[in-house]
Image (cartoon, rainbow, N blue to C red; front, side):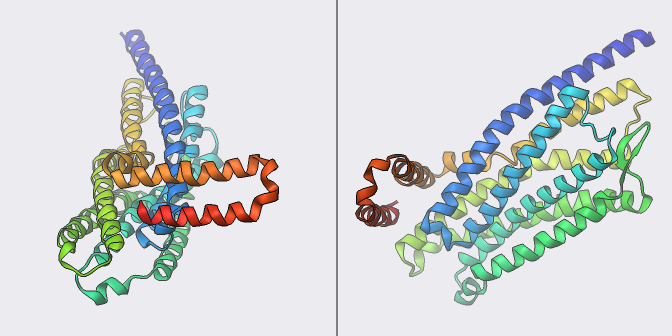
Length: 341
């Protein structure tokens, strides 16, 4: 009977490992491409360079881009060793949790910053619209990321390796902090509540934006960004909540390796919920592309009119003689095209 149970648990562990490997490779491929294109579009278009919402999305995309490499490293280790190797090295145990917490908090709260900023920028009150500036946004982002790094180093350093449980929190105070504040509040209810509330308020504002005397370019940009942010928040809530609930449970009730069947089921559950959670870090570009026709035109413009032209210019050395004229002409065409997107 015990032999049968052992073979079943081994089969479940094998399936969980294969599932993690294939889903990890797929999400890594889409995540790297999607986040790279997000960064390219939001940094290349002049329309977005002075937009605070676009700045937060860019920071989020950079964070998500880094996460793809952390995720694929875990996937490779799982395929080689059968687990993420955090139970084999104390340094990797601490470093992995420190890095993933920095990325998760940065991503979650950049989404919150985006929704809050969009609420203020679409508000009918002039003083509220002028309250948030790009300089202030950069300042708050810098302060927040510094706080996140310090917080993650302190919390991540409390992780340790236990023979039967693997890489887990070893200090009772930090276990209580994680169980009752970090997972349920800081990475759970708080960002979900902020993002949901302010995205709904921003959507309510933008529905009445036609009544205000605003330039047509600004009006279209506000409507575009609000729609994109609203869809991002919906996906964020749907894909993050299950894994957050799972982390709360695991922190309170870790599964020992001395119980093979329970451990195997726990690994499979973690693999499935983690793959759902990872989608949150790679989907934003594809979400914006699907639900915003204007964003699709902007992506096409950046890839075809900007990046492709620059690539041709760098590769075609034969045109070096007419460099100044070509640069001026290309710049003028680009400026005119951006205004018409």
